[in-house]
Length: 329
Image 1 (cartoon, rainbow, N blue to C red):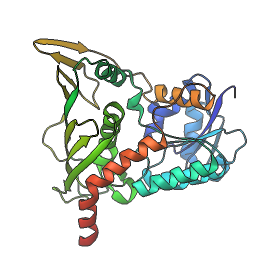
Image 2: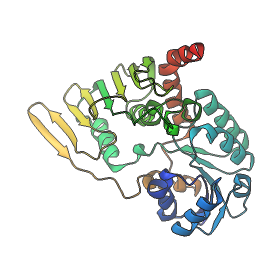
Image 3: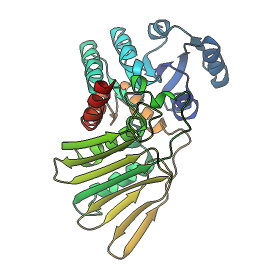
Image 4: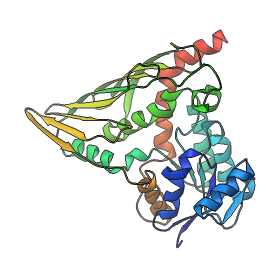
């Protein structure tokens, strides 16, 4: 395969800078067709980004003989459906995160892709961003000794409400609230860096009442390595905070997940900082690994199997809240 020719389902905000141009600029990759339910928007996207084909028919794009692989950039409620349709057509799939609304949907996607012998990749792109690659290198090299504990805190103010809710706050579309959308990146990266989570406990609540989604979540994890982690995600906070600290026997690494701030390494009285910017199109490094995998070299670190495990952990954290919400509804 000289190049991977992509068909993209969905033309939303994530595709404007993060992923669409990355599919065009990665070596051995081309974005040749886009699909949007609104034909005017699909045509406009294709024109602005120099994409040869556009359509409002997902099946037409999936079965287009000029399309080798499918990128699904829709909200999570349609990830499973489109993945099954792409697998049935024998096309490799790259799907946005979170992989699906629930672990059960992830399993259906994995089963379909395995049955069709097509690979499945998921857009947990922090696994390949230079800043996060550096963090993993520091941990793997023993810069902080053996990891013993992790603290994650993400505080954000809630968007104005009540009123029309963004889809990320609608559980029937997103699988939950901003915890599912943003917290999934954080949990996925810890799984990548620290290995399997052996046990997890979580609780969630709704403190604002203007959305059915959880707006505060707390969780504790124990990794198979013996390391412990805690997380607090608060989405009706009067202040913003994005700070994760990984504690080892010989030092600490501190960083943010969603702001491009320096990574800090502390060892005793010594402190080092690493200022590493994101690339212009943050999904491009991950997409490059997918293209390499499809063309027969290299491997992608974010697959359906790894992403499904992230969804399993999220389901475990939100299980009590979801059951309570279902009973009260």
